[in-house]
Amino acid sequence: MSRLIILLAAFFLLTLGSGIGIAAEIYVQPGDSIQTAVDNAVSGDVILLKPGTYTENVKVNKDNLVISSESGSPDDTIIAAASSSDHVITLQANNVGISGLGITGAMDSYAGIYLSECNNCILEYNKILNNGYGVYLLLSKGNTLSGNVISSNDVCGLFVCPRSDNNLVFNNYFNNTVNADIKNGTENAYNIMKAEGVNIVGGPYLGGNFWAEPDGTGFSETADDANEDGIADSVYRLANSIYSDELPLVSVPKPEKPILSVTNFEIDNTSRSNYTSVNEDNSDESTTDVSPEPARNVESKEISETFVTDDREVKFDFEKNETCVAYLTFNSKKTVGKTTAIVEMLKANSSLASEPLSDEVYRYFNIWIGDGEYATSANIEKPVVCFKVEKTWIRDKHIEQASIKLNTYNAGKWELLPVNLTGEDNSFLYFTAQPPGFSFFAVTGQSEGEVLVADSADSQPSGSDARGFNVENSGTINNANVELALEKKATAPGFETIYGLSSLLALFLYRKMKP
Image (tube, rainbow, N blue to C red; front, side, top):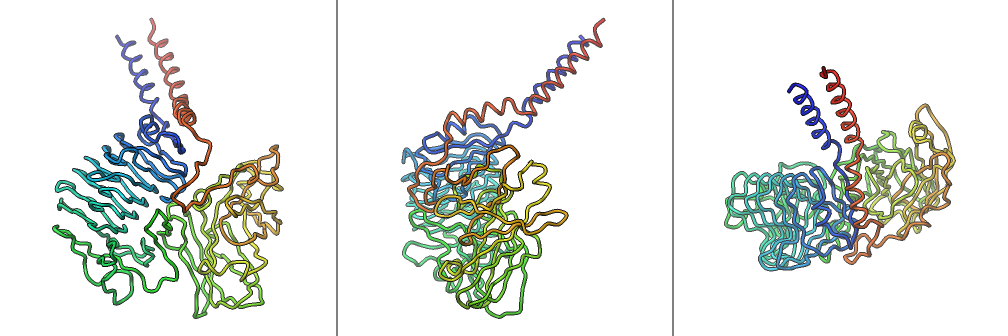
């Protein structure tokens, strides 16, 4: 009996261990089924959709999943209802994230996203257009809606049933004939406390939501804002409800260019985080802009400012070491006054550059100069970027130093730029390169023994416009790849290790107890 108990205990350890470390990222491309990926996923999996249009109705009944566009943009990753007489996405699970998707095509009493008895789900940075309901909450609690565009839905933008509680709705853009049908509920909120941060219409503060109407007479379109902080001077009372948006958003005065467009899935994703550091001088004028890179992909930022005049070299130093860029220079052809340069170091490839890179990537980063209209070949010449690469990365990845290059994204593909080694210190090598302009960059290298490719972009298909509604299918992932990813989870290192240790433990205990 004792031996049987010991063997059963070992078997229990083995069974428990088989569930360790098997969460995965599952990639899906147009032509494949999102539903198949959902059905085969397990708790903790992240389902990433390649850019394109997916025609289906998706039902999610598993907890702890994330379904997101790979690009982060709802303009290039669209789910269109296969049946207009059903919700585009039905959620019947807890702790599910839906992010960066365009969602359209449900009609009449059906919704773009329908939450039924869901708790603690997050809907963010989606574009939910042309449905019956935009988002419908039924008996759902603790959910968060943030950064979404909910527009042109026939019945209403947001419906909340009387027994949906503790939900948070803020920093969304509503533009529907009926924006919200709120049947109260308990402890729901339609704004957060006022906080610094770029909001969904480009204002300098986060608070509530932007309430527009198709005829241009919405509350946020007509409300007063005496101090021009982007927050209305009065609260917005939700019709037939006990609730109000205490900090409704309004448009910032005289924006230089549109921050938000809500037609035909053409929307700029504005950054939602503050800059990490600033190098200042005492000039009075300034030219700056808001980055279109989604904040969730930005690891760190640094700002440098200087006065720009014509016929001289302009240099922006980044002395806080928040990114991999040390400085950048160019010659200006005109005087524009005090100008801001922003470097964003990214967690992954820029959402604005859809093509992958084949080499080992050290860092992705973006560079923005002024208002986005200034830094063109008509206004600047001889641009130079100085960047640094950690020696530990070169050593640990066995990178050939001669293979280190700066890649720039231009005309829908990556281009390799030669670099010059200009110096080093105890931790870094410093390189300079001369890009054709300032945009999206990646520092790459190749491991020892690999064949150096002259231009990695030559072997990559050119990407489609990331802002268009109709996007060509891209990528090479298909259902076979989805199945392969799922198979790999069964042979994950955590499973093999636990299996081996548990087997040895069972054998040892059995031999020890044997008479």
